[in-house]
Every structure is written in C-alpha cells, then in structure tokens.
Amino acid sequence: MADESFQDKTEQATPKKKDDAREKGQVAKSREIPSVAVLAAGTIYMYFNAGSLTRKLGENIKQTFVSIPQMAAGDIGSDAFLSETLLNFLVLILPIMIVLAIVSLVANLLQTGFVASVEPLTPNLSKIDPIKGLGKIISKRTWRNC
Image (tube, rainbow, N blue to C red; front, side, top):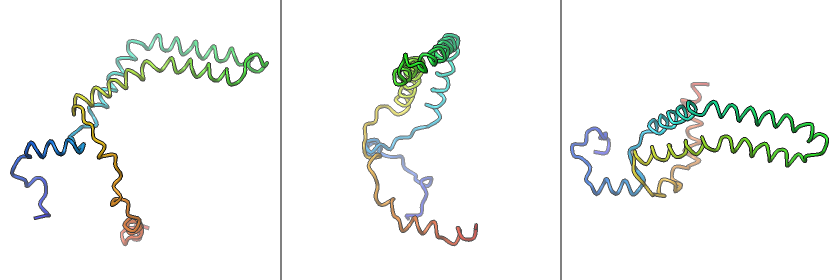
C-alpha cells in the first residue's frame, strides 16, 4: 500500500530507525525556536547596550567625516582611510554578532543535540532532471494561466 499516508501508521518507529534517521541528519527541528532566541537575545543586548552603541557609532561617523578633508588633501591614503573606517565599524558590531551567533548555535544544539552528518549536504542528481524541469515549465497548466 504505497498510497498510505504517514498518519495511517499504527506502530511507533523503532529505536534503530530513529538512530538511522539521526545518522542521516533527519531530525525534527523547528525554525522558529532559534529565530525567537536570536530576536530575544538581540533585543536584550540592545536594551542594555544601545546607549554606548549609539555613542560609539556617532563617534565613528564623526571621525569619518573629520578625516575626509585629510584624505582629500592627500595626507591619508584612500585605502588606509577605508580600512580604518571599516575596522572601526567592525569592532562596533562584532560583539552583537558574536552574541547572536552563540545564541543561534545554542538554540539549535538544545533543540536537536549535536548531529554530525554530511548526507543532507551531498547533491542528489536525481532531483536535477532538466527534462522534468522543462516539463513543468511547458505544461498545460502553465499555458492556461498565460
């Protein structure tokens, strides 16, 4: 009975099937949990650090505009000006990026545990069929909608 849906199954998956699925990288995972965790962490970070962040950002912008006449006069090279400006902004946003990356990793690890599988990354050439793709593009349904 190949047309039975997964809801018609009467028995639970065996531990071996669960382990095999986990080794293949097939784990149940919600995308919303890490998203909410990152959003909450970013909000909390900004709540506590918004004052110093905006102050430092203002200082960086002011320093950038003050340095423009020096660069135009040739005292500072454009590559040094650009690298200093980008470094200042990188130093400014690096702490929040590190916090959000750690929160994202922790939320995913708490949800599924550590899963090391390269099988989901391997390309499946049977899904890349140009004839089927062309058939979807040139179908009766597509021509009716035009």
